[in-house]
Length: 344
Image (cartoon, rainbow, N blue to C red):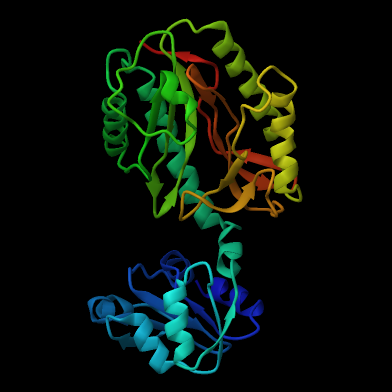
């Protein structure tokens, strides 16, 4: 944690008030729903109310200050001077209260998130273990019966499989079948899964606070030619992106590697979202790989690579791996097979 704080300090122009709970946890290992850090040149102050005081006093390398439960109001009366703040994590109402207390507030968006994007070996180890568990869950899922069951029922089976593997789902598992598979962010519903359709399953688990997140598309019998063709194109698009990704590549360039493959076919325009995003303590974090991305991949980024093809009213395909960007290419953390798996 000390290394993280030292790296953060080197980038600061003034003290930084950290209020994003995930960033507080990343910097000092303290998990709370009502805490803040003030990172200065020579000290780190942890603020939290009585409910977290005992745990906060055990945090090494920080000075703990107990506050009122109204954390923002307490800080407004306690702090002074020029202070950077996490503009993406502070509401306008909270900003007004802090400003009214006399603070000279300087927006510093994404400072800690930029550090979080570069995973160290301990973080990579946790994500590798999460991916290994997810591989096993998907392998077991492929032996399950899908046809005649509801999407919610299959999603519940995934939850149980993660539990059996000693973990827990990191987010609500997506199980989208038939026409629902054409919705990129579809949720499991009471729809009964039928034969000869695709089922998009997007899930992941958490190990030591770090997540996995990947997708496989199953077939519940022989598919129509259009969906078979879409699967082949999506797989080619992902392979092109996996070949292209490396440290130094921009998020736009990574996205283009997959999108060009899709756009050269009859499925042009059917890949409507970005190629992928970072994962770590959160399921969606920096960097982003999309047509609008302003990010450049660096050594140690862990990103999803998830092209998709969505055919409204028919079905959809998505294939997603978790990979580490390296100077020479990638380390693919996902070992699960990618041929079209047919389930009953």
